[in-house]
Image (tube, rainbow, N blue to C red; front, side):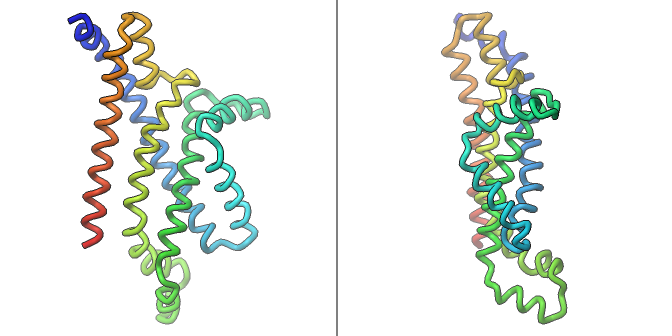
Length: 215
């Protein structure tokens, strides 16, 4: 009974924290998709002057733990004169990591399209941007979406780390409530169930989309 009462009293705080978590995840997914597609196209078709630095950035960022990347952006970037609050710093770090993950997915999806499709598009008079948009893009997107949806679940899970730089997200809300109620077990279980519900829904959507695109 005491545990249920603690959970009931924590609901408003947890809902507010959940809203912040979803906001962070939504921004990271949207911005990561935008910059990731640009990076992926640059890796595949960009000139060496752009492709090599893009490859270096992707390889370095993907080799850094997300927590280290968040702390780097939060503590080191302001030291060189770029002032960031905790929310922009956390979103920027997670977006950078997400964009590099998406870039590799885009590169693989584009690379799976036979080069003969590009040559056929050029043969009928399409310019290269038109070939990407009308020939390569529709074929690559079928291969891109399922793994990208899996990366979305990673973004949701990674958003839990923003609590370490003072953002009151779902995890931070849980910790604050625990500090008032001294009931850690039911609150951590509830938090885990919330994350599981979000990621399970995304996983089911990914499977359904993959099955549909396979047909």
